[in-house]
Length: 118
Ligand SMILES: [Zn+2]
Image (cartoon, rainbow, N blue to C red):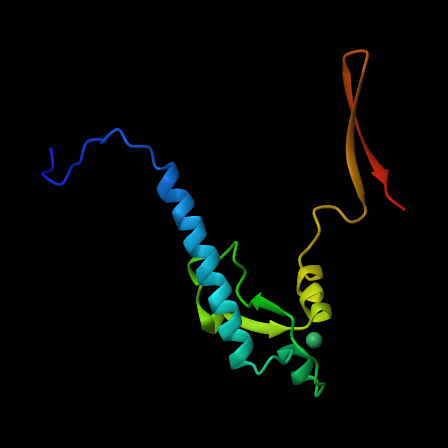
């Protein structure tokens, strides 16, 4: 057995996890403000199109889901206005934008079909 092995102390991690969550929230709020200040509170996407719009949102350039390690990285943040931020969300392919797959079970038999949303 390795000497670095530490047997469980019997303490549960709940408290530290909560503290971590709090730390992340505080860090994020601080970083969010830093990003806005760096971008002069202007929407960077609008600016690229020659438009001056006040930024109200801070966007993760590389998705937080794919790059969680960049979640608190200032260089991965971009100030956006509400509209542009919504657009970044829309770029994501929806799970199903044509319809909802349904599975009917009748008389013990499964039948698949598509319920089209219109
Ligand atoms: Zn914008």
